[in-house]
Picture 1 (spheres, rainbow, N blue to C red):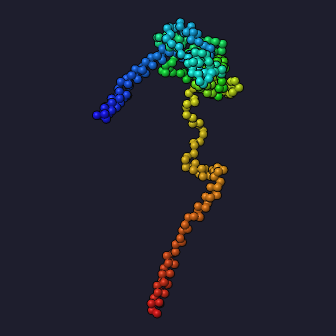
Picture 2: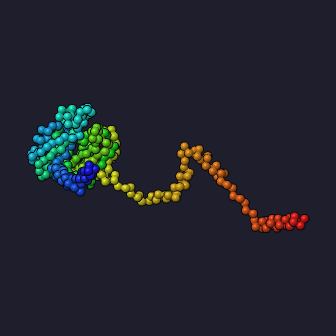
Picture 3: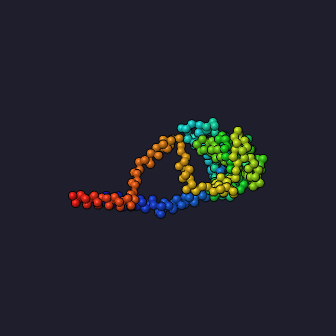
Length: 295
């Protein structure tokens, strides 16, 4: 009886936890709810480390009722201190130069209005980046450029200052490590119009904080290399076999010496006797046998 109860209990638990059961419906509701919250949320980047909740409230309250404000990208001064404690007590790492935040509004339309604050200089040298937190938001590649070989400790405003001569900069995004806050060496610049992109491409190999940066169109780095007219086709696989046999590394020197020895190990092919000679030998053998039998 106990085994039957355990079996029935296991079946009941599997039905409840099944993706087709109530759990799947709850997950679907949660996903829809999260997407709804994202549409009411704006991401605020490139904030100074001393920014407070009161500063953000005073900046965004004119657009509508704010439900919550959460700070992100916090780097604690010590590994033992949690990010929440570091935010409350302002015990951040001395190398931390900026923080990010999420502002959640009560209405979706209020979040759309708050996007007007994008590019606002909230403090000296800190132009904030305000964008919707919804995943459905798309980035306009035609008005953007990709940056490579950026200094790891660069700030967003240093990039903005470098490219402002090309045109109005809508936003700067330096991709950073979540744990250290340091840049990963690449980022993006979004301009107001496409004409600025042509001018920005001329800054390729320009020096920014002692490094020659790489500037190219956002879509170029994902495209496959195009065929250049006039260039011959790549050699076929059959042609490569001859080059592979001829090319050896320094470590294969012994193998090259040992390779000819393999030819000597093959069994030698026996010489075939011509038919004419074979016939003469057979006649001699028969004659000698007949003489012996006569004696």
